[in-house]
Amino acid sequence: MPDRYVDAVRARRAELRAERSLLTGDHRAELRSCLALSRIAASARSGEAFACLAREAADHVEAADRTARQRLPALLAAAVHTLAVEVHDGWASALRPALRRIAAERELSVDLHWPRLPAPLLPVVPTVAPIPAVRPRSLLAGAAAGAAVWRLALFPLAVLPLLGLPALAGPALAPVAIAAGVAALVATARARRTAIERARLRRHIDQSLATAALAVDADLGRRLVELERAVVPVLDAAVLRRRAAVDAELALLAPAPAEGASRG
Image (tube, rainbow, N blue to C red; front, side, top):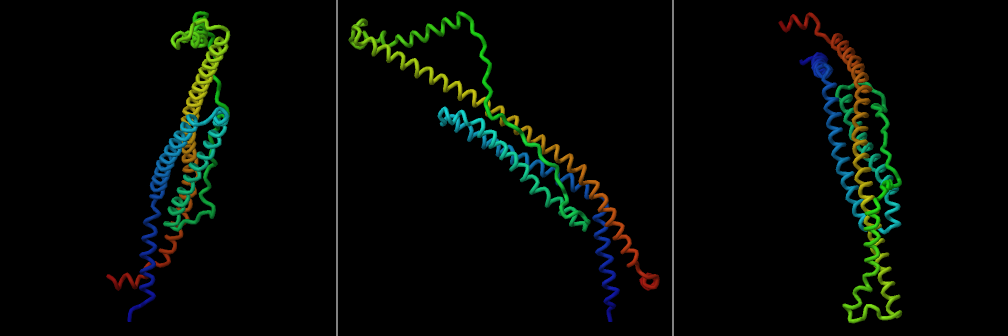
């Protein structure tokens, strides 16, 4: 009849030897591979998210009125904050189970809340777009600009002859021509101001998003370095404890001298 106890002991010894083969220090290489892959995945998600936010902000600049343009820097700052939180949370949510799997496969005893990830440092985006300093213009540039403005204001008076009206058609047409010139001047000034505001917002968006993207990526790198420094000693100690327990159990289950002689 087969000896079930002996078979069970042999099976248990085989299990312990297989488990001990996982406790030879390869957990460090697996850990570093896991951290590197998490960094690549998080950087890819961050790049896609920032690119999408840049497109949305550019569309908003083109379609928004002046009030909406004034609110855009604050909205951009809030959106960057939310995006950075999502990137860091996604990185942590994907990495923590992977690290616990490394410990579980080796039956390592770790804390219930392990690993504790370092806190993120979120980027700060200015809520007001900076106004560029106005450089003093030369007298010639100021005179040329003034002449251009007055030519635009007097343009309706100049085209009166083209409409079949005398250039000096009396006081009745002069106010109309002047009003039309002033309206054209105001419209031109508003269009120029709008173009300047949009250009300033585009520069602010580009600079803010580029700076925030670099800050998020750099902070991910910092968290990975700090996490590796904290996790490796914990895993090393857990591996040593588990290997000692496996060796002790293997020693208890070592084959008796009689069993070894019968095999010989």
